[in-house]
Length: 98
Image 1: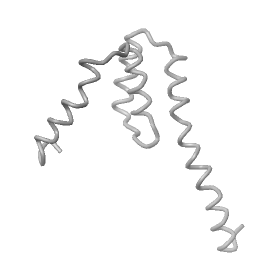
Image 2 (image 1 turned 90 degrees about the vertical axis):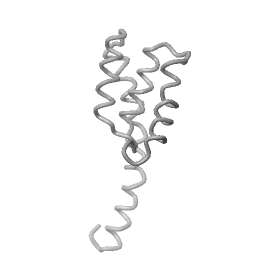
Image 3 (image 1 turned 60 degrees about the vertical axis):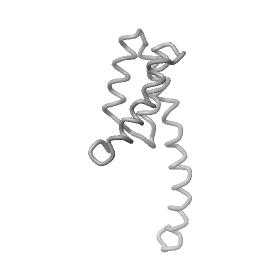
């Protein structure tokens, strides 16, 4: 994005910085949200997850607090299994391999 559309990159960077510069959440709560976003099944950003966990620990977060966020974030992944397994069973039945 930076190489192909630097103006769009800068606009996005400025937009995403607003909560950090002008937000009302406590810094630890903000880090918890970022952990959840980066660890989410649909995002899976390991470097971001690492940075935000490190920041949350620095801000006083406990292991249990961070684990709770990761546990809550993992729930959408369950839906992949709930959606995919019935399809797998149908396809195996259709292929005569059930």
